[in-house]
Length: 240
View 1: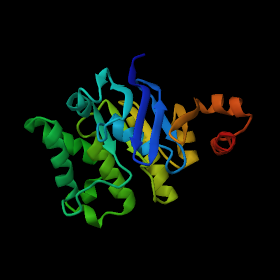
View 2: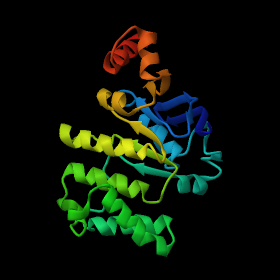
View 3: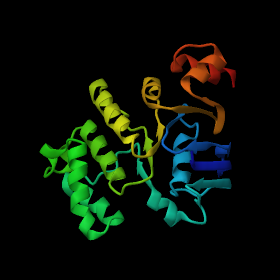
View 4: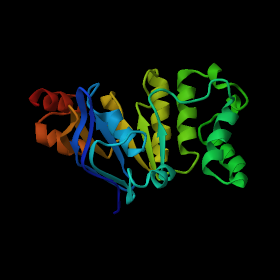
């Protein structure tokens, strides 16, 4: 199985802080991987470097064999990203948001079919001609993810995709993410431990920009002697 992401010593420094500190990870094709950590652990910074939104200070990162520093355009063609700040144009309709993103990635003749498929896949039919600003938080999240995948990326970055959603909206979005796992590799950040338990094939726990532990849930439970990801996380975080 091919590794879609490989990093070695990946580091991001700011003037007064090292946000990511020597990160070395591999992510195989066709998996959903969760990056877990408290605020400031380096999760979003890692995604920003892997999606070419921020340059590393040191180390290397490859996305499907492409260097994020030397080949950013090639990397951007392979990835989609849904940020924790829901990135939709409030004054455009749902259709217009999707058409805008599709127009960036696809040939003209491919835009209309891609938009129609995205609207159907995420159940956005009743909102197609409504401005994004009238959507609830859950529907905006759906639209944001639909926009992220409309270019048919090989890798999808989901940064806190269910932040602020009620429990029903969160569970519905989980089901839609499960479907996406069949067609692309996914890197997920979340503060909801039950979300990572439900969705992730492999888990990385970041503490102060470093990997403190990694593995499947079962492997992490065996490592710590705890049951449930929340207990595992607390045990690891308190030891560091």
